[in-house]
Image (cartoon, rainbow, N blue to C red; front, side, top):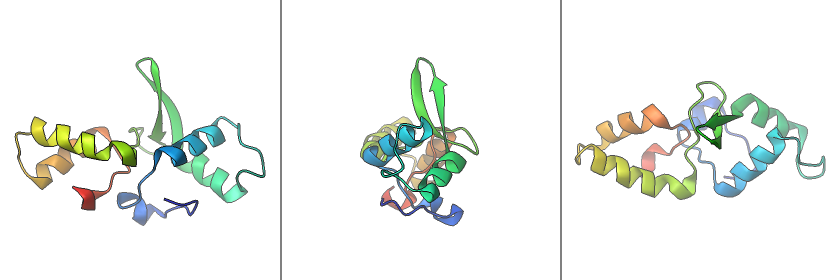
Length: 110
């Protein structure tokens, strides 16, 4: 994903990479200088994301529903675990189980 911010309609197909998540976290913690980001990116970060403590770890979460963001690099591992957990129950059951715990995942990859 580039620095182009997705609209609400694109959130089901947009993915957040690890590098982008680090930039979003830095923006939320006010650690980026003005040269490193623009006001549109900052506004998008603050409207779309929040940092939340789950257990003893800090996670990047969706601001609307509080679910953790599923990073692109972790999608395959999470998809495999869910597929095995639901006993190979099919795409729709996988998507239901995935939606319980995560947001910002790519449905087409499943």
